[in-house]
Length: 286
Ligand SMILES: NC(=O)c1ccc[n+]([C@@H]2O[C@H](COP(=O)([O-])OP(=O)(O)OC[C@H]3O[C@@H](n4cnc5c(N)ncnc54)[C@H](OP(=O)(O)O)[C@@H]3O)[C@@H](O)[C@H]2O)c1
Image (cartoon, rainbow, N blue to C red; front, top):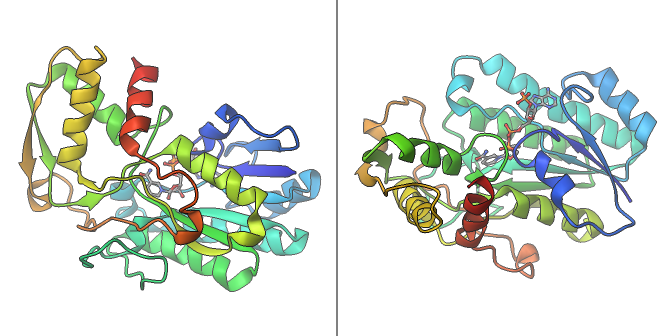
């Protein structure tokens, strides 16, 4: 089985080459330099050349704050890019696995979001990601949209790496405690994507996948500091000063409730505890 990864140099995309894969799986790893998903002609040429069985789209515009200032670029990558991939998938009869986000929701629900809840994004990034989902749903009959939240891992920029860096020079840190979510390890997401690829007929439509337990950013930071200190990755544990979103430097709206209920069809995969994955990442980065 040939699996083509778009966005192979991002946080999630970089994890595929680290997985222990069955021998019958051939990965075609495409970074932005080889597959720019905003280029429709190039996208189709790559499909023609490689003839993949499955495409996993990890390519995205993910700069949430910057998206407010450059919405055209966010929509070009997150909407038009998805459309180009979907058109190529129709032409070459390929199942598309596409990563999406908790930010398609407004965060006002009191329970974890389920995949049939109605999206209502409150920032440009979320709107552009929802627009991408809608293109896929409109054009394709064989697709999986996998919504994930609060991604962290050894590659790219993420909250775990930022906290480890800030812990070096700060005795206390102000961290938001009125946003709740499920931190989710990038390598767990890559592993789930490959499982979906191997059984694509069983995993169609929109699915949710989240690490547990749900925490606030402040609780997540405290757990990172405790773990990193025990592992010797930081010298001392900064004290976490909980603050409200409204007092944070960013003016971008973010959902208060980012929790995703992992879909029943994915629940036979081991429930993913982010604390174990975070420990692994802290050890790897140490
Ligand atoms: N990060 C999170 O916390 C989070 C949370 C929920 C959902 N998600 C979703 O999960 C998926 C993966 O996220 P991630 O954290 O791995 O993102 P990431 O680290 O930002 O990776 C995205 C990759 O896409 C590439 N890219 C940008 N424009 C492209 C284009 N036109 N063609 C091809 N590639 C392009 C980027 O390259 P450059 O960096 O060179 O531009 C980058 O390598 C995304 O769909 C994201 O929306 C992420």
